[in-house]
Length: 69
Length: 149
Image (cartoon, rainbow over all chains, first blue to last red; front, side, top):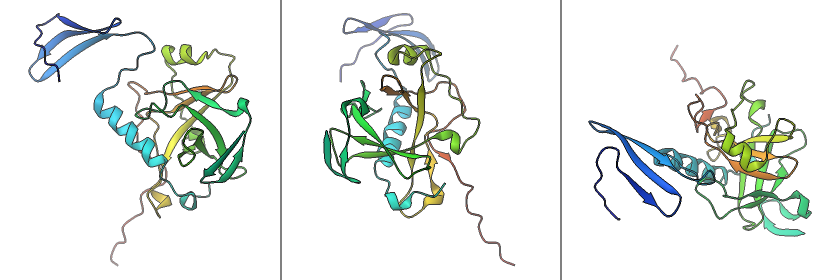
């Protein structure tokens, strides 16, 4: 993993179109600003992981378990 | 076109039946082409059947069948990506998860619905920001524990 040290209001640039800015640092919380093209999806990692897991769960349902609704 | 080796046997479909997820499902970017298979006539359940991997089908449900007031706000970016306007016919689905042998423990992912432009068949899975919906919305009430008399 590439590791970079940044100060408040400094940023990093990823590729040509993505910029991540450190907006605020307060104790253990860091607020980031992300500038990215509209077609680049940005997710909180833990939410992304949960959704991926739910998608996989949906692909493992057995048809006989579907309730009559 | 014909797809064999699915959960449902052979499936016949036309090019216009294919739903395109340009970015795939969340966490599964390589699955981009699907057809919609109805579970049963009149059922709120649909399978998103992968065209690329016949063995993969994702159970989805029409969320409003279970949660009447479910009305996710479609962000501008998603609306633009799918070419949705006020006049576009759209279909909203939620992935459904059912633990093996426990239909009453079914949950719907209401936090990341699937949005389909019913006119063009462009689709994407969106993450709702700042809404009260969860990725594991329980549909049926939890079974009550038996109380000793």
